Image (tube, rainbow, N blue to C red):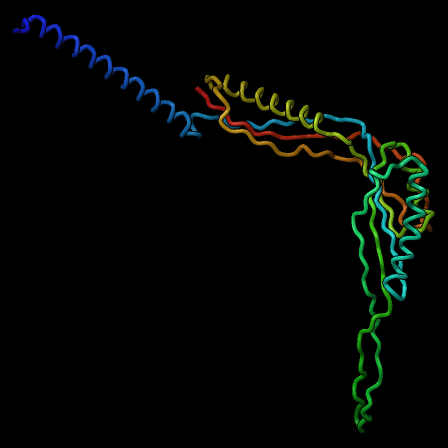
Length: 265
């Protein structure tokens, strides 16, 4: 059966229209992808980068105290036993004043030999013009044992009293308190939010001046988030002036800085 010429012509027209529509679809899609590539690839002309700063303040709720016990003796065991005696006195004092075991931590413990340089005359006789040099050597004269301990004080108003008491039990070095905040996560998040808002505000102002609009965020980075602490040094030895019963704790500042790159259009 022979197909009419008019039907064939109509079929060709439909096929031609379909090909044109498909070609336009792919052309538009290609142009869109090329435009998107240009926006992402040219950071100098299609992005702006701004920095923001945020900070929050809070009253410290913990204080850290540090002390070391050092003792000398003829043998390692004797030196360690002396350290243990002083350590027990210090720990008993801390626990008596409400410091819990979980807040007392040994940060370092060590024992070292102590040396003494001994010289003796040479067994060789002196000549007419000079005598042979003396002979010397290093020998162990004893041992030093030490233990360093960190104490977290949750009742910050007791920090001065605790330092004053530790200075009387025979510790060798005593320093602090370093005031801090026990859980800083919420404060860091708040400081970050302020920093992002600061960067966003600057970016919106710059975009307005440039006559462009902000797009999505291309990159983000953060630095900081660490507290700036106010610390008071304590007495070092028993003979030094005792720490005051009350030490000003002031405020801690948690700060962070962010850098955000925005696409513009």
